[in-house]
Image (cartoon, rainbow, N blue to C red; front, side, top):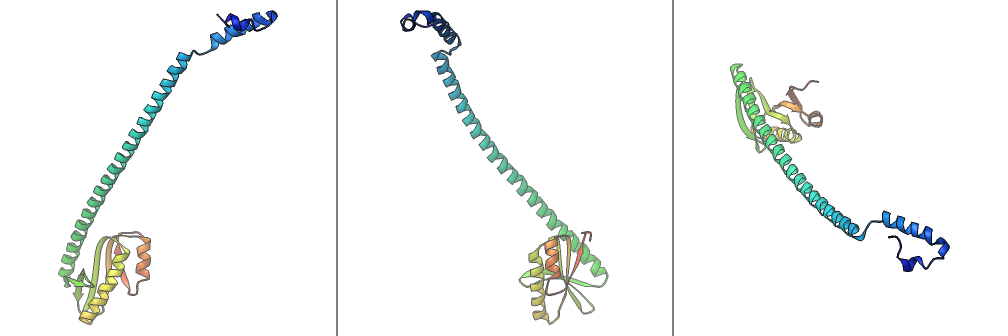
Length: 188
């Protein structure tokens, strides 16, 4: 088919055959308008599908983040319950052993918090039992000691029994205004 005759006649006769060949080549290698329209529609569908996929991925990420948060919260709650049960078990064990050894063991409120109190031969010990010692425990134990001293006139020894003591908490203990003895499963 090539170029239409009225266009071909615009060229000198001598070069019309190569121009016709060029026209044929262009026609054979050109993409028809319908194909462009079809490709445009396909690209539009792909763009829409990609947008839907991105939205679905975002929803999946949000769902996963919420799921991870729920799992983390459940693990934290489980750890907290385990810590409380562990603390109670250790507290009861220590109390029973100390009472058998002749110590008087009780709980009291000093410095607006409950603490374990151990007394033998006039020596008074405030004992903090926890699964993981926190900086606030050090502050609170010192506050309890001050309150105990004011209420009883006796300056107590301070002790912490903890499964874990972080380096930051250890610094707090070392820098504490009162000497605090540590009992921990941590290796030194």
